[in-house]
Length: 191
Ligand code: ITT
Image (cartoon, rainbow, N blue to C red; front, side):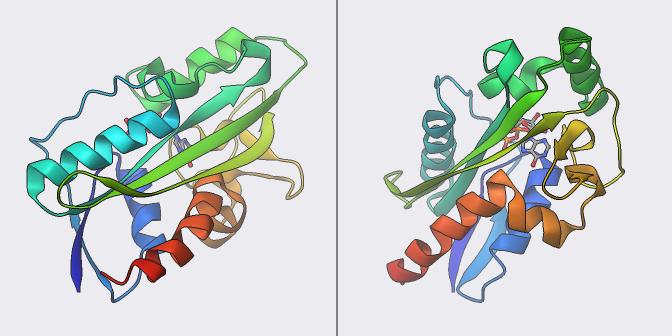
C-alpha cells in the first residue's frame, strides 16, 4: 500500500476524489492544513501540477491534486481558473455568476477538471483532464454535491449536478471523466 496525499482543502472535492480512488493499492491521507499552495498558474493543468508537486515535496509522499472550475461561454470563459475566488462562499459565488449572466439567453457552459499526480520528489508522473458541457440555470435546483452544482444543468440527464446521485454525477462529470482517463494509467504505475 502506498500513501497518496490528497492535495485539496475543498471537502466536496475530497469526498468525490475518495470515491474515485477507492482502491486497496492506495492509503489516502489528507493534506495537512498548514500546507497552503498559491495557485499562480494560468491554466487548470498548471495549477493542478503546482498543487500536486508542492504537496509531494512538503510531505515526502505521493500526492494527487485537482484543479477545476466553470467556464461560461457568454462570459468568455469566466470564472474559469478563478472559480474558487469568485466569492467567499458557494452561495456568494453562485449569486455573483447569476448576477453577471442576468437575462443573457446563451447559458452554455462547461466544467473542466485537471488532475495531476506527483511522486515524492515533486515530479509530475501523471496528468489527465475531463470536460462536461451543460447550461447555467436562472436559479439553483437541488441539494446534493457542492460548489456551483445547483446551477449546472445537464440537458442529456434533465438534471442539475445537485439533483444527481453521486454515482450519476460520477458517470457524466468533468471529474469523473478525468478520473476515468487517469485510473488505468495509475494502475500501470504499480508503485
Ligand atoms: P483546492 O484548491 O484546495 O483543491 P478549491 O476549492 O480552491 O480547492 P479550485 O481552485 O480547483 O479548488 O477551484 C474549484 C472551484 O470550482 C471551486 O469554487 C469549486 O467549488 C468549483 N467546482 C469544481 N468542481 C466542481 C463540481 O464538481 N461541482 C461544483 N463546483 C465545482
